[in-house]
Amino acid sequence: MTGERRQILGFIIFAAMVLAAPLFLKGNYLLNVLVFVGINTMLAVALNLLLGYAGQISLGHAAFFGMGAYISGIITTRFSIDPFLIIILAAFCAGALAFIIGFPILKLKGHYLAMATLGFGIIMYIIFNETVDFTGGPSGLPGIPNLHIGSLVFDNDWNNYYLVWIFTLAVMLLSINLFQSRIGRALRAIHDSEVAARVMGVNSRILKVQIFAVSAVISAVAGSLYAHIMTFIAPASFGFNFSVELLTMVVVGGLGNIYGSFLGAAILTMLPEFLRVFQDFDIVIYGLMLILMTMFMPGGLVGGMQKITEFIVAKMKKIEDKDAQA
Amino acid sequence: MLRLNGITKMFGGLTALEDVSFSVNEGSITGIIGPNGAGKTTLFNIVTGLYTQTAGEVYLNEKNISFSNTEKLAKLGLVRTFQNVELFGQMTVLENVMVGLHIRSSSGIFSCAFKLPGHHKEEKIIREKSMEWLKFTGMADLADMKAGNLPFGKGRLLEISRALAAQPRVILMDEPAAGLNTRETDELALLIRKIRETGITVTLVEHDMDLVMDICDSVVVLNLGKKLAEGTPRQIQENPQVISAYLGES
Image (tube, rainbow over all chains, first blue to last red; front, top):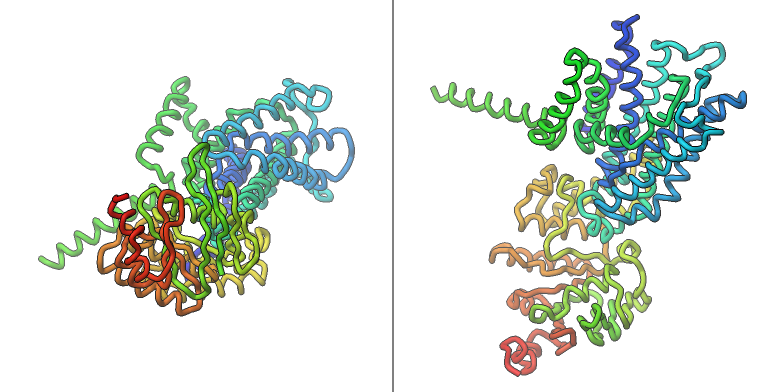
């Protein structure tokens, strides 16, 4: 029980820091960046449920993100329906699609699953690009209205920050809860040894599809929020490159670790901003960092930090022992 | 309890098993022995639904389970362990056993994520029962260790603990003594007897003859995919066909 209590306390501290951050950043452009850190965290956590918990790769997750954005964008620019209802509709559509394609493709393993999800992502990208009458095609879909609750319109960084982060924190909390539960354990069991999980009665086929659908739903919600915040969307944001970037966030942060997904999303979102001083060399440094990270921190940032603390604690103990002997 | 009727398995043109029939009595310890390549593990894979047989049926308590999938068989009370120990390496020892109780609990994905009231109570029961099984196999002090860091012998015990947590009626063990030292094998023999005392039927594939002759009530001998003999350990030891199969005479 103490472990559970520590976990709750950890989350409360994290949430308090997130919610307090804007008070110190008023009028700062960093606040705008942090809005996108929030959206990317939500996406990274969604992918982490699939990749870090259940051990199933997806190279097409940007497609669900795009689906949420386009369903919200297309409907709210044409009809005056409460956009929050459309978010629910978009989430439902993405979940249903994931459920339908999940049964055949999640039977595949390893590289084949990667190829299948990659194919799915590309097909969706082509749809975003080619159905010009609905999506506006490559030139994008402008004029998406901001979200509003009554007279409160989410049209500045301050409002959007809280809008996004309330969703993100909720997704993080639910994912943390899931980790240490019957379903979370079953998913992690599938990750480690699918055959043993099945022998223990875990229905891996249905469970994999379920978590794929949940992951798609979260991604679609992130997409809808993104569309309403940006008020303009174009297919380039939902292509293969972004799917890979999401994957990188999860891996850099640490597989299976929800706070790791936040760290990964934060670093990959903010790094390009900080690397601007290097001008054309920024992409080189970016690539170099990723290579070094995967080489020396295979457990991701969170795993790496745990190792470093363990190392320091062990060193300190050694010094203490020596002092005691002397 | 468990009855196999005319099991045949072909891999392409190769006949791995041919017309194998035998039954396992409730509450017994039954050993399946035979030289390498006799088809013992294939037989286990068919019984647990990982392979589909070419012909024949498997019955559990006279219910035909021939084409039930692996997940369903666990629910019906049939679980197994693996020759090369299949643990959930990234999870703790306790969590591994808790997965064993998956089929004896019912919280769904939303109940787990939102921590609905029923979930908390169920989680507590799962944890307590899992600890009991770890005590049963003498592994309680290792509960918080990562399963991937366990030495081989302990890993095997953990696999058995996890299988027991599923409250099976029959447990199938694929070479439980492989890779164990003499002391560990003796402890395993004691544990298998203890498992039988709780009312669980044990079936094992094993190469360690001393262990099989020591603990089994009944022994089935396979050779080149066919049943060669069946009987008590003493009958098997005296069977000339079995002796020649093992010594390579013909």
